[in-house]
Length: 73
Image (cartoon, rainbow, N blue to C red):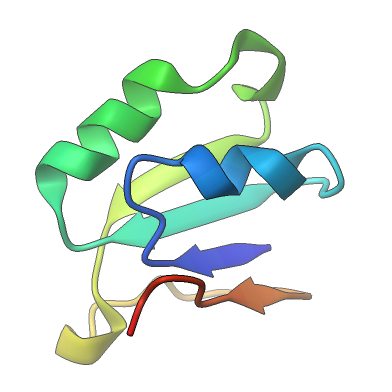
């Protein structure tokens, strides 16, 4: 699962338990740092947060079964 605009991860964790793996991206370095530091221990094996912006064309490469864009516009 890919979440674009993951911010500090609050929304990410609500559905992360339903996915095998989650990548949250956000252009805000501070928000990504908070998300990484605040990830619940039971989700750390499958949740990852990266600084990236699809608008700037530095989006992650790969295949995702599902993508979320909540609160991104």
